[in-house]
Length: 259
Image 1 (cartoon, rainbow, N blue to C red):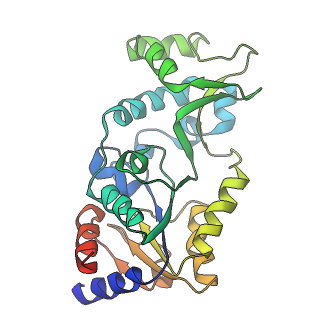
Image 2 (tube, one colour):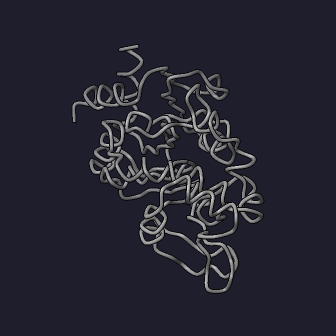
């Protein structure tokens, strides 16, 4: 592994590099992923709790799950993997980040160019008129209730964040069945296609459109380097594969660059 890591470090040091990150990079920060043994979807059925269509019918299920997520996001801090990527951008090695995460930990670590494919938890919008709302104000109101009591009220249609126009207010995260902002996706694909190396960290690459981004890089002559604790479906197409913990391997990668 050491020779392979050194080869990647040498290649990245002299080549424009982009990075795609998934839920796995934030697990050491205390935020669960989705598909592992202890992932979010083992507790919450995605078609009920993570579906846009279900949100429009009855947002109480989404909020039941998202309240737990909000508690974790409130206290989460960047881990060494986030910090290394921010440092690589500052050094000019990393041109930018594409992330599937909504936790904001890349920005908290100091990353500047971040394309959030699945949106952000930092703001909320009305699903009808698009009016923006403060996520913090909504969170403060919801957390003034005991959770079980709040969910009981929400099941009856009460205390659900609602716009002046009557539309439901939703965090600006992308749910299943919801259209992803196309300008954002095009910008992410442009970043991937402009780089000689695409580093994929903590993603199973099982969800579109993120799963296709490595192939955007590959079609334009870029190399793919994957760092993830588990094997994935794109491993066979990658130039470098490391089944390792990102928070341990990325600092080693930087050390190998001697920057």
